Amino acid sequence: MTRNISLREASKRAPQMLSKGDSLLLEDGAAPTLNDLAGALKFALGDGRIWLNDDRMVLLRSNVLGQLRAAMISEIGMDRTRERWMRVGWEQGVQHARLVASRFGPDNLTAALAAGPRVHTMEGHAKVVTKRFEFDAAKQHYHGEFHWIDSAEGTEHVRNFGICDCPVCWMQIAVPSGYTSTLMGMTVIFRELECVGQGASRCLLVGKDAASWDDDLPELRIFGL
Image (cartoon, rainbow, N blue to C red; front, side):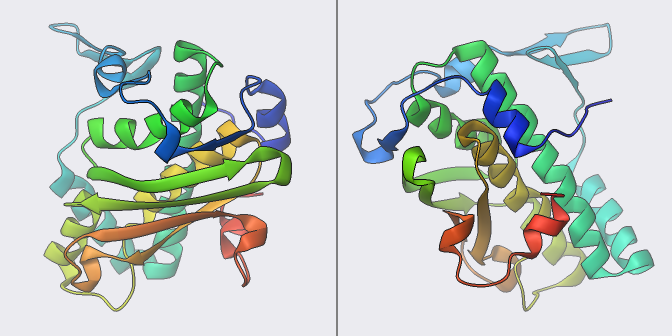
């Protein structure tokens, strides 16, 4: 069973990498590429095991996850279901950050941050398109903007409930929060500003350091920060 760790502990464990960067300045082909990350995925055919680096994985149909989510919403309501799925997503992001840091080394924080969307894409949640991200760890600053094309979580919500009046990719939005926060050793919160669950053509997500969000941050309580 994985153990949740604090951001302070994550910061101590995090490799010492360049503290300032911009995705627009990242060289094409900077490791880890999607092919590099795919090399960490191993199938033990006939043994009933799939590995992502040293972590065991399972293949699960997205409509089954959608049915599970729908059942939870019916039983405990949308608010409590959203919080529980966000916690799962946060832990997923933390684990992805550990994978990238341990397997591909501490040389380039910009490249490590850029790998997060590639892992998310590789796992089948959505095609992630990075518009831009930039950061300055010394100033505790981060800002990033991304698109999700064909979000699995949003699609399943619409299948079960129709168009919603709020963003619905709860687990998926928490993944980059956990991932970026762990690599940077500071709190970074991502939110969906547009969602296919609301009828948008693609999801728009924005991540910012906690101080740059000008309102209350319920995510801090949800993620146990």
